[in-house]
Amino acid sequence: MLLSNCEIGSKGKITGLSMADSFRKRMMDLGMMPGTELTLIRKAPLGDPIVVQIRGYQISFRLSEARCIEIDVLS
Image (cartoon, rainbow, N blue to C red):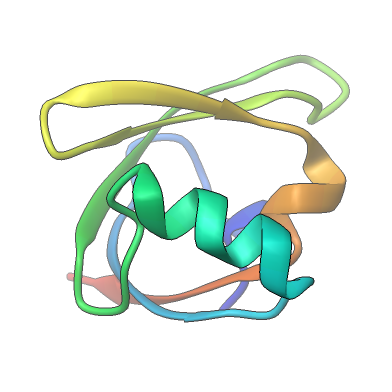
């Protein structure tokens, strides 16, 4: 499932980053590696930006960026 399709409060593990190498490296520098758990905290009314909590801090993504982050939703 893509991060952009998740609902507020959803928890999941990152399974893949489908983006340009330079942007993928930046995301990995921020701790967004496959296997890392995250929680969707907030979405703006039109869906952009999306705020997630990962490793104790919050990161905001554009909707276009969230469409490149694949997660496995945890129940």
